[in-house]
Length: 70
Image (cartoon, rainbow, N blue to C red; front, side, top):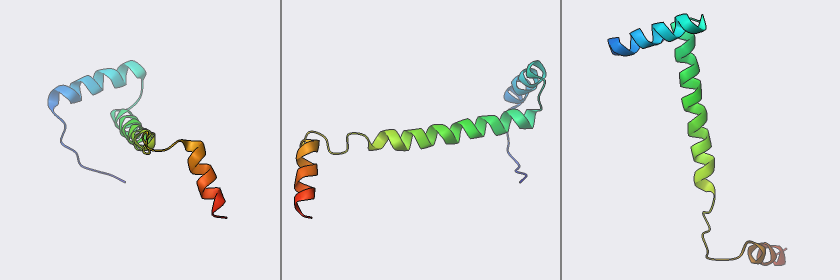
């Protein structure tokens, strides 16, 4: 899918230099950057879930309590 994005001239120049050095297209670099951003966001969502229970109750105690309901 094509998308129109405004990027400052200085960043375009930097992208062009990097693309030439890596022998890839500017579009390829942008796709890579977007992919990395989205991957980091996924990781942030996963990391934000750790420790949600805080110190309120021991994990083993939670397991035993929940299993006792079976």
